[in-house]
Length: 262
Image 1 (cartoon, rainbow, N blue to C red):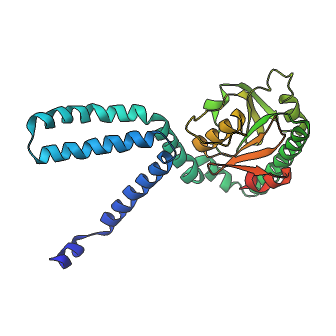
Image 2: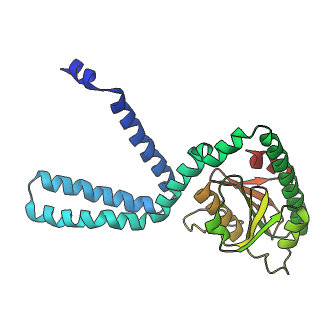
Image 3: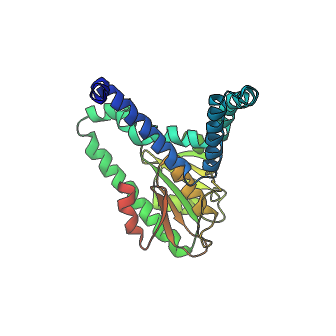
């Protein structure tokens, strides 16, 4: 009997279990540091109670809980909207960006890759120069560096620029008397896409007291989009980078190179 059970298991059954487990694991990673995980646990506990009530044939209570569960699914979609958004965005940016038509067309253009790498290196050098100057002057800054995602939803909250990346331009943008200094700069496709951008803020993130709102915004942006965000503290001039859902302090601007290259 046991042998027959294992014989009936096919490859696609194993693949089905693996994919479901993978999706649940990825969703858990998004929820584990969020207040929403407690809501999910509460809803799941109520679901188990509903199954138990149905098994015991308690019709009246089963009917009430059944109606609640039907509405509860819709309520969960509303409650978990930010987490679901981050989940699908993570899938699109992390796992499927290399399969996009844009990347396939670029792959077909032999010789373009080297030129693109050279241009990216030049942009990173300009970012490092700007960060060094901003750090010395203790000028607060937020720089979002996105290679693939256009981030237009975020860019539209600021001022669209489409300007060449130069360290003097970046320093001028974050100059305290500049109308564009309050917010973040998004760099995409080796261009300054936008300035004065409003970044998301996840209140459930726990940070040390010495970190301010810029650091919280940088980490929130990285969690939502999986792109690195460079931060320069206005109080201390210290340099940090939000990457891989962590806020990492860097002692030298050159240390940023490896993070941005990856």
